[in-house]
Image 1 (cartoon, rainbow, N blue to C red):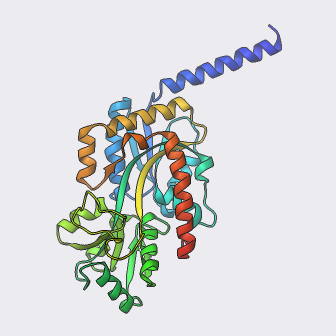
Image 2: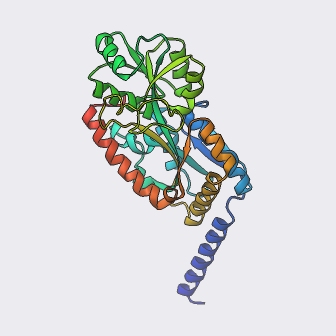
Length: 325
């Protein structure tokens, strides 16, 4: 056999082996990196999906919380991981859109370092305050903040997170400057809000709804153009006078760039199957999460969506003069 023929045969065997391996994926447990603290909304939706994916894939999908850096620490780990399907990351508007502009030196490039798998959830942000803050709606809140901004504090899940930027944009729209207190996740930030140690948060609905319903905090506005199905009686910021204001979150899966297409397709199909399950839909909606429709679930859609979100939030970050501490 000639040298050229041998190289061809070896290359064909390697390609065939790789294809077979991808088609049989997963042959062992897979790690879902949630780049935020346990107990927050991203952790909640991640664990709902992990259980459903485990059933479909026939292998355990293990949730690993890797917090820090507004979600960039865990996301960077997956961006640099071996593209063999052993791990993927749950990304959101903070990690896979805002971070590209908010950070002066982001540790990864969303469009170059990841293989998009699929968008799977929408999460509304809601403005919530300590229960004794003297404001009953958004306009009263703005008036109070303008009079007391030097003494007030707002919290976030971390510097650079969607919760940070949501409130920073709200502050800019309201014309106030308020001290930012970053936490290591939405759950600890919410604990301090309940305790009255900070004044307000712009937080995902899943973590807020139980405390709103329990009367431990006050909800003043949904920070999307339209009302949320999770809090249908709560007016949006736009309804309450902030024309065009919108700050929303979302959740999607990404694998390292170079992950075989067959593996990406299999995880995407398993994600779609989970979203079509009435039990999964109910669990998500019960905690204030809206599963996305079939027309928004493909890897191609997520690739274009992420690019558009990077551009949209990049303009918003620059206009608001927001930077990560």
